Image 1 (cartoon, rainbow, N blue to C red):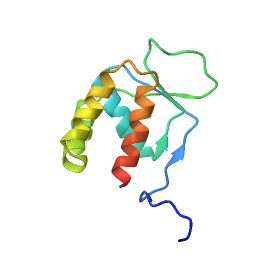
Image 2: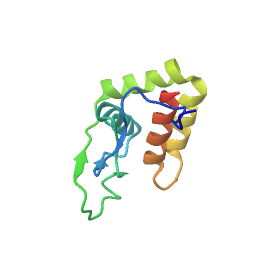
Image 3: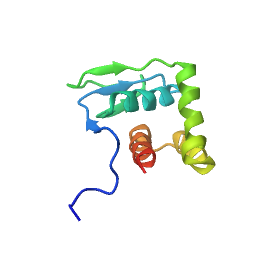
Image 4: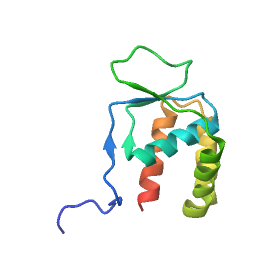
Length: 113
């Protein structure tokens, strides 16, 4: 074995020195997922206006686009199954700290398999 990871996404994913700022809605979160996949990046953090704080990282405002949100949500069931769709919805509603970033990381791994 060459020491390479068994999970090999088609394009290289990179950690980005950027904070995503979104409106806190589920649809807004799905747009953060869209942005992360489109840019092949994992943001440093994902914040809502209530959680926003001073940072040295640039802030990228992610606007809610219902068409993008529907597209992302439909891909959960089509490519990952009904259980994943349910898991993402439930976990988004949880009170976990950094739930958005955790879910984005999970989705990158799940789609790479």
